[in-house]
Length: 196
Image 1 (spheres, rainbow, N blue to C red):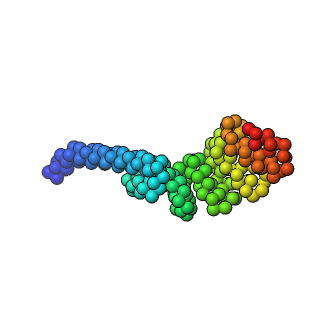
Image 2 (image 1 turned 60 degrees about the vertical axis):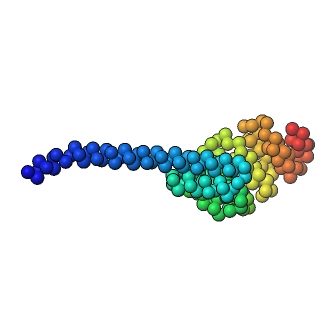
Image 3 (image 1 turned 180 degrees about the horizontal axis):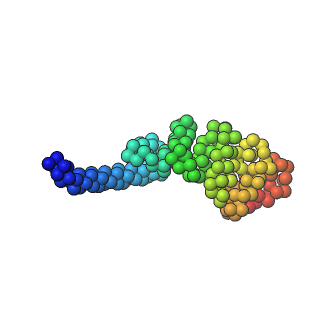
């Protein structure tokens, strides 16, 4: 008799499990949608330079979706903008932990390290961003800025050359290459870059 009773419960258990799984899937989709809405609100606030409002919305997005890499990334960018460098690096580290091939996370962590005058760390992060995205113009440009800051003018010129090769209309790259050429005492080359 017990065996028959257990067999009769199998279809009920199977149906119940399917309904529970469906409810969980619906809940997860709703949480992800709410997280995306909070993320979009944060982006809108960032556009208007409401940094603390943006952080609140990114916090909400992360609370709803703890693996939302773009929310961590943007919150890190905002934290860097408000000079919360430790918080920014923490957010970029989280992005890298969640997605180790996300070039933007390395680029932005490099920017924060650059702001902290950790030029070696910034150079490593820009290099990793370039390794992941060999056409990453901004990473080459930023690595040029690091090399110029440590007075490696030849290295800076090489980085700016690559940025210009990838984007021939990048005026700041020409200007900064001109500054680096001045450091190399290539005054004619500097003038040509400044005239671009």
